[in-house]
Image 1 (cartoon, rainbow, N blue to C red):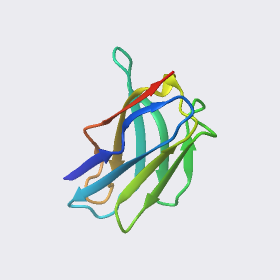
Image 2 (cartoon, rainbow, N blue to C red):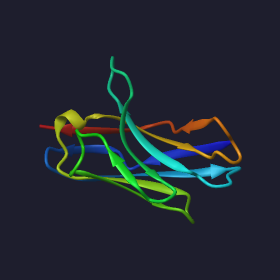
Image 3 (cartoon, rainbow, N blue to C red):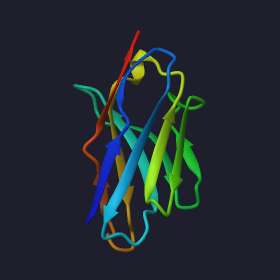
Length: 119
């Protein structure tokens, strides 16, 4: 089992920045890929960014150039640096991760952290 805990959400104004963190704990061999998703009421959860164990990063077009995902393997953590935030970035942000060795075919979700961007 892998437990993910996000933190760092809050209320900011347009153009400001936030840094989200996600820490994994539990019975872990190695987190292969960390993902960040976001969701607003009435909409499907949307993929935002991901980073593999090789540190290759991928971003949704809507955040490319503004958000940066990173990871700290010894700390089993991932971070989402969000710059130039816009009201449309308002959402609950979720961390997702997989550990194919100890938990093949499974992925895990955190509880989410609210990000609100005021105009």
